[in-house]
View 1 (cartoon, helix red, strand yellow):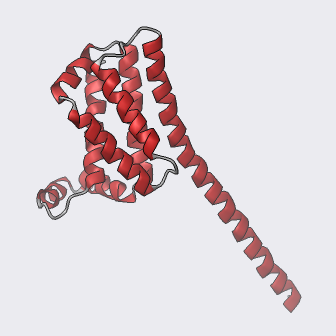
View 2: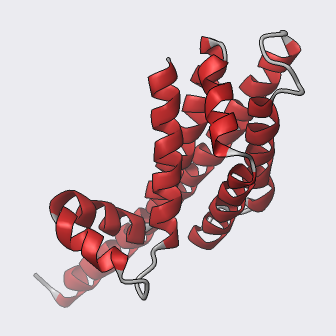
Length: 181
């Protein structure tokens, strides 16, 4: 091979890497937007349930979850790890303001359509949390594989993992909806 051919190969390699990087970034951005629009779709389904009369606008379930969905939507202008984490904590705090037992009872008494929408909301939040937080994925893996050790480390209050706590909170809501169905 001549020097010119080697130079052309390096130019082609550089161009190929640039194209692959642009495609990768575009794919990443599309996945982020998919989570955002799934949240909007779930919120629209909840509003549709109210409009169709299957859920009362004054019910605890509607008030709590509509506010939580709006909190996520308002805090997620550009879906990043930081913005999603802030939205997760804000929505979780909003949900915790309501009496947990009253909310659980309202979820159990809700129609299957309402339970399905709330279940979808918790799945969207949990998926987005897993997607946006490498730390959460590490914690979930550690909890799955090293359960006792992970509980011990978590019991030491110097090692709080707020995103893990938020994920587990939505997992319990997801479980309550699944039990009620």
